[in-house]
Length: 77
Image (cartoon, rainbow, N blue to C red; front, side, top):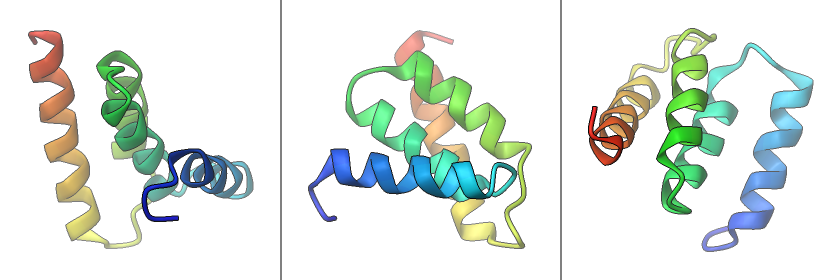
């Protein structure tokens, strides 16, 4: 999947459909939106992800917070 954004998006969307409260797939969708130049979508996804279930994955939460900061910066917030 490395470098294949559409495949990564499909994987994350599929995982999110199966486990809607599990945050990492939503955070992945947000990262893909950020890479695609859509900080508004990234921000929405990350805000939802950060209230989801991380199962004590502090590193992934920290990455999501960093990506949220990047999205807010891109939006001028």
